[in-house]
Image (cartoon, rainbow, N blue to C red; front, top):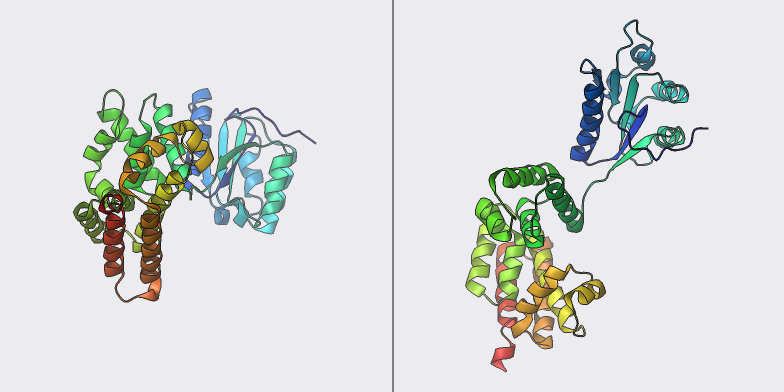
Length: 329
């Protein structure tokens, strides 16, 4: 049985792209196609969906040619292949054809797991394409995009871009490419703000930042703009909760360097500095009041009240007032 290869050669006989992130799946295909066409400009590329790959089709596509042409065969949604076609693919994995690269795109779940296991046992070169559901994953992706383009961007700039663009990786990648093409030198938060002002200002995190800083009027303005541009109320309550919890965590932590506190509290070091600036007017009682306000707003936007907008406005005002509680004695 062939061992799983650690070689990352895109021209390996079999590439297995596993996950549900469309951008990463497409990039895995593009990398193989680019490598094949660099080796042979006349490479024939066949990009197939499960309904196009019937029993016998793979054998036709991979049969020896008089011209010995290089070929890339891409099979999308391989987890949806019929049982008979899966048998064909498994048989092919045992004796792959020369000059042919097979690329299987698989969602990675329980469906079609037999084919996934067979490809791994056959020594497939594997590319992980997981759905990036966590903000931290999208932040790491954004940093990686800048690095891949040979550009430097500050942590605050990367965070501002993720806050502004949201969860769409294609849009994030496109935004990084645009900034890298248009801006010379290090890309900072001010640059991102200039390019994505409307979206950045609509960010739920902008609402939270202004509220925990005690800037009531600006927080309410950001809130109204967010709601007007379609930001879901539940995202705003989530951002408010994160902002207040960060204040509470840091106020309860022992003093120390940002790097040490970052490890202890699970925050990036740059965020420690930002939260330290935001927490100046806060008291423990203020944090408790703000957390209760967030919980009430959360219930209000999830069906516990008739007016989500009012519930959010009330929470923002309460949080901003709590942020100035130290000065009121």
